[in-house]
Length: 133
Image 1 (cartoon, helix red, strand yellow):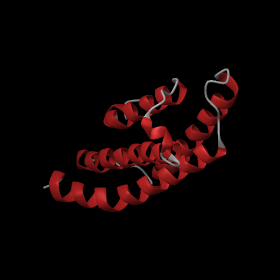
Image 2 (image 1 turned 90 degrees about the vertical axis):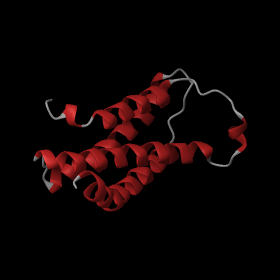
Image 3 (image 1 turned 60 degrees about the vertical axis):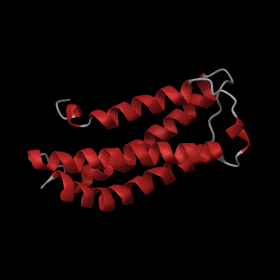
């Protein structure tokens, strides 16, 4: 539990995802954009995964380190499992207000992949250059 305080932005993103996934979505002009829902899912999960990596690389200067196995679990496995759980809960517990979709799960997983690549490369370089001077 003491490590959770090292990842406040990641935790905020997770709470926002849970909230957004169970609130009623208002209709907007963007409803006409093809696959806007899937793009939104990808951005939410890519953003959350990228923020996790930013906070991880930033915390290295405080001698906080996770094993490669734990990094994979936290940055890939857990977000994908959370995504699947959310989709199941949407399909079964929202009284028809939300629908759980495999394509949403797929879009979330793609977002996690983008966040992983972006976080382990570009964000690492930025943190090393600007934060760990």
